[in-house]
Image (cartoon, rainbow, N blue to C red):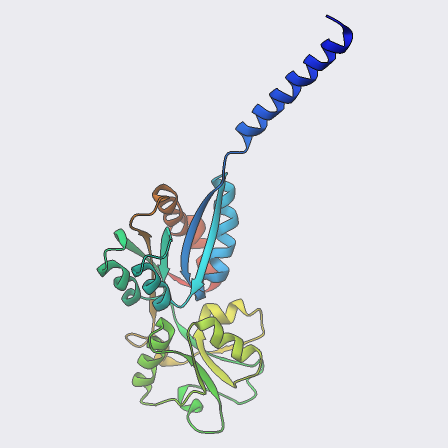
Length: 254
């Protein structure tokens, strides 16, 4: 065999070996789709990186929004592997439609605060401070868990708010406070903490009233092609690493 032919054969063998090795090391990625309540945005973003590192070849994708909207999407057949809601009622919507496999897990609780500009320039001390034209406020729509929580707090305080807007998720309320579009907004403790000091939280006693504190549930979507990954994500979120992230964000653990 000539020198040139030997060189050609060696090059071909090297290329073949590289191709085989590369193919074995890079299998197609699997995507886990998680529909999650807006108030979970920051916690889940942090857990995503840890989960992907622990499960090579997995990519976690989030569909974030109001729990009521997410539950309706699941009922209508939207593709998702996991549903994480900010209330029992919204999870039950998906359960009753047969769209949740097994029993969902209740793993955290969140409470409301009145979000205001740093320094509390309007001197807001509680829900009665929000009544009247001297203060503008934003709340979540009644169908959204934070909206239902707000209504429960209003009943407990014996007041009726007159918000300038009703938003479809709690992060939209937070944004209106951050941008100065309103003087105050009813948001969760965790949202205030996630603002990084751009919003100050005011505690009020009715935040602990029946119906005002919201439970967080997570469940696997029935018929998911990634049932094993869904179960792993749920175990991860409700396990030690998830507990640590949730506690740091301001959630109460269950």
